[in-house]
Structure formats: structure tokens, C-alpha cells
Image 1 (cartoon, one colour):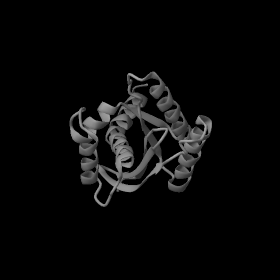
Image 2: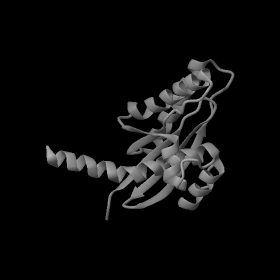
Image 3: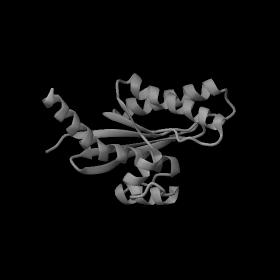
Image 4: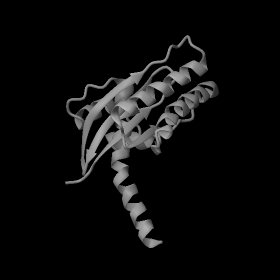
Length: 171
């Protein structure tokens, strides 16, 4: 029987940071847990970022994932919003890095394509497909996005492991 791997998916956000955990055994992916980190929107930026870091660290300590994955920041026409999202993304990424986990990065289109089959899927399509792929899961929007990121990582992980093994053998 193959080894179980737990993957933490992170949908970064300064107002709402979704997280989701899936367990992978061979080609079977199953739902484990999910939630949303909601910092106080009236707090200073530094306090909000620290809240994201601490809450993400608590998730890692509680569920002990083997790897983490996060959505890349997409370029948006509002530079100030992109900078804030980048800061939230950094705070969320620091927690797994601090715990010794590698953090894989996936573009929004790659995640959508991995889950729905097209890079132009909307939030409702993503949530519906996550619910189909993970029976028993009733994730909300940010949580469903985080679970989609974890599923995307699970689908890419075997390829990455195989490539790493091939490179090790070649050297």
C-alpha cells in the first residue's frame, strides 16, 4: 500500500485567507479539513499579516501536512491591491516555510485547468467540482479554492517526484 501524503492548499487574501487539507494515497485524494482565516479589517496591516501567519502556523501544528501549495498572485490593474495581496501571500507562505515545509506555487489558470479542465472556470464551477472530487466536503468559496490548490498540487506531485527521481539517477 502506498504512503499517505497530506497537502495544505492556501488561497491567500488579506480579508479572507482560505486553507484546505487533502490526503493523498496513490491516486486517491480525499478531503481532510478546511477553514478560513479572517483578520480584523480595522487592524493595522502588520497586525493583520501577523494574524494570518499565526493562524496558518496553528493549522500546520494541528494537522501536520507534508507539503504546502499556494496560488500565485495574478496581475491586476490595481497596483495597491496587488501589493496587499502579495503581503498576505507572503505571511501565509512563511508559516509552512517556518515549519520546514516546501511551498509549491501554482498559477490561477493552472489550478482551474487541473480542477475543471479549463483555465477560465468561474468560482461556482470550481466549488462544484471540488465538491464532486471530495465527497463529504461542504467548503465555502475561499476554502474550496484552497482545496482546489491542494488537489492541483496532488495532481502535479507525482510528476515532480518522478522527475526528481529521474534527475537523481542521471547524475
